[in-house]
Image (cartoon, rainbow over all chains, first blue to last red; front, side, top):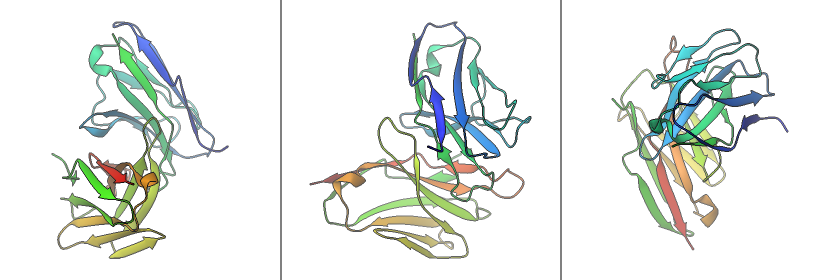
Length: 113
Length: 114
């Protein structure tokens, strides 16, 4: 089934540990995005990638890094997790023109303790 | 500064009645608007969209209205069904040069009561 796969679906992580959230799409979309969703704050963009080999910072990039080695994969890394990074993380992809083509994964629920 | 605002965090409607979800925006350069629906433990899914050159777009029970002069759009659901209970996000496409990234509202939680 075409779409976006995120892994893991949930994780409890000790503060200070490194963690990579995985995101893979099979739609050959050019653009990919990482969002976090927190109660009362909606969807906030962490990092994005317009095309393979390029990345950019969103609204809340601090403490996160991304890479885009190929079209399909867009991992998000927390180098040293902190409790404020407890959130639900969504990966999304689009053709890059924003005309309704955003497809979201099912999310990763991360708890940093 | 919130460029896309959904001022009602929640809305409760009786089954069979109309649900009206509102969204205001500040940037007149936005040229495309979208509504997404999100169920708990799932990612948002695209619902309906409208270009800024139109004032109405309809898809089954869902209609989006755009008032450019007021920088306001609304989503109408008629008739509302319990399965429509979800969080609805309004989003606007950013102007050219901004990678056309979507700018999101904070969402409105709709509860449709049987």
